[in-house]
Amino acid sequence: MVKICCIGAGYVGGPTMAVIALKCPKIQVAVVDVSISRITAWNSDQIPIYEPGLDEVVKQCRGKNLFFSTDVEKHVSEADIIFVSVNTPTKTRGLGAGKAPDLTYWESAARMIANVSTSNKIVVEKSTVPVKTAEAVERILTFNNSNISYQILSNPEFLAEGTAIQDLLNPDRVLIGGRETPDGQKAVQALKDVYSHWVPEDRIITTNLWSAELSKLAANAFLAQRISSVNAMSALCEATGADVSQVSNAVGKDTRIGPKFLNASVGFGGSCFQKDILNLVYICECNGLTEVAKYWEQVIKVNDYQKNRFVNRVVSSMFNTVSGKKIAILGYAFKKDTGDTRETPAIDVCKGLLGDKAWLSIYDPQVTEDQIKKDLSMNKFDWDHPVHLQHSNPAAVNQVSIVGEAYEATKDAHGICILTEWDEFKTLDFQKIFDNMKKPAFVFDGRNIVNVKKLREIGFIVYSIGKPLDPWLKDACSGKR
Image (cartoon, rainbow, N blue to C red):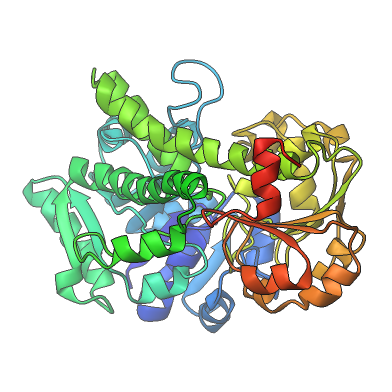
């Protein structure tokens, strides 16, 4: 029986291995992690990740050919194929701080693999890593255990949180990069054989190592670029009276462009987009490609601009201050159908409002109170580092309350900020909400999900990103109010 081990039981490792186990019943799959609490959760009735469909897959396979364990060395030693899916956080200090990825955990995993291996291994990069990481890993493995043959493959993930299981079951493509040597191509074929259990052959793409490593960064940069492009257009729409939804619909009808990722919003989030673009910027700078680096860095700057613009719109609309006012925050996760808050725009929006001394009442159907307060207490990039390296400021959340439903969050509020496009927010009783709010009652829709016309008829002053401005908001901008 082929044995697969995945180092890292996070958002990538857990779901990916669960689907491999589901589709390959004759392969034994072990997911290992040094975190006892995380592995305990994977072995419980309450798995540590909310992802539609994941719970059912895990419970169907767990204990049969899918195992979660803290015995890292045992499973690595026994495995034929080792996936490495560990954190590659952005460095917060030293060379490349703020842009370059920290490969400490990758290096540690490589050294451990070398120390415990007694048979030939295929080592698969599943984490997002810079170009040429495979070469460095190969050197560490070979220098520390020259008696073993190691083949390094790059197999980047292209999952979208909220649809990860469907993405795994029916992927657009599976990318496998390997050395262009007989042994390298043999390793590529071995991994291809795993995916061939359910993925059509024409969707399994093979490349050299460096192309595979760069393709993941490029894909995320292109997606983020589209979001920043439409968000930049949303600012122009507001200034001219155009409707960004109509503009993006017209643009998306062009088959050369297409409609996906053209929804204006408060900004993009998630663990990958910003981190991968910063990684790309750093690689460009290291290779002397200054203009290319500046081009991609602008995608991040527009995203930050959009979040700041949203906060400024809230404050300027509410008589230029939110000090002492209750603001309801509906949605905190970076997108619907996930509990993931990494780099969610809600963090910067909430911090911006707290900076003007607002009182926040936050509701999200999947994010815990502990997670929200932890996020708002931490410095940027600290979320991706171990707990002992995270700097927390508990006083930052003195004016934050976390509640269990939208109606509680909005009661007696001066304004509402919709920051995640959860479906339940589209069907709220806004008349009931309006009746229980302070007046004038404001709605700031950061996801363009409400019926603006209907809410204005109820009596709300509504701001929807990239839409023609409410007369009140026009006066606020001009100083006429």
